[in-house]
Length: 354
Ligand SMILES: *Cc1c(COP(=O)(O)O)cnc(C)c1O
Image 1 (cartoon, rainbow, N blue to C red):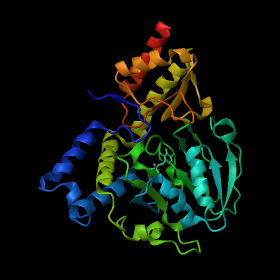
Image 2 (image 1 turned 120 degrees about the horizontal axis):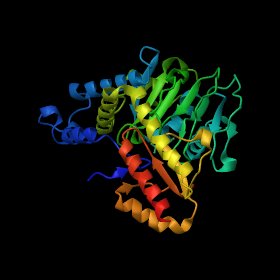
Image 3 (image 1 turned 60 degrees about the vertical axis):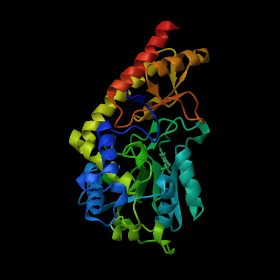
Image 4 (image 1 turned 180 degrees about the horizontal axis):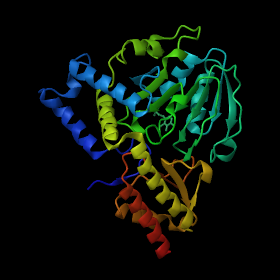
């Protein structure tokens, strides 16, 4: 039986997507060939790539607005450097809201001057800083929309006159926001889209071509755009599986439809955390993530009992990240409401027992 999978990443995908993707591994669309043994220049794969790129823009509401979608390799971690290579000339502003933001800052600093506009490192990143300024002479502003490890999420974004870059690895396609306020969005596939191995990059083309450095070819967004996201052999299986997930999402009614489900799941989860005296939330209430709920037991003696009960209920991967401890329930798009119900039930059973 399928477990209730709360994994933070790589994470749950729709069952229908897994079935279809597994069929393609053996025989792609009755071609007598596996998807992973055909040329990436074949019509079959070029169609998949084009469809995936178009679906990404469509679902974000960015069609016909000067954006291009790419499916690259190297994970979101490569984007930490690639963003700076392509956009950083003198100085950029970064909002430091967690371990991933800090890594993005570290990589960009290897190239040039980075200014932290604000940071919540002083409180182990349990909130999102507000009320900071982004100077208008910076090359760009970088933020992380959802802090996967700490369970905080930006509910609004600053109005800046400089290009806004956002790492949306763990909440892309999960909520209704104006995606056109961003000039560059990147997201590793393995949290809300597909298997690890590809990273979606959505770029407003007119922000490119403004730096003086000679960008190494594989790091150059312009070359990837020119090559239709086929500068070199793309990760064919992750791109195909991502395309299937995006089709699944479109079939459900797109981002608006899944956002409603995600709201139901997170409301249920947080009301249990708030009302059950055995649990305490980690993140500041106003900044809590709809995707990753972080919480602790108020009485550590119950740890073993709670974890045994979770196991018996078929609940998997709610252990917290080592830098936060406690528990983390990741509720990505493909996680059914029933899984949250199962988790909340165990939490209330524990209260009844204790
Ligand atoms: C997981 C994650 C990353 C790292 O992604 P990789 O694909 O492993 O490089 C970066 N940023 C955020 C917000 C993440 O959740």
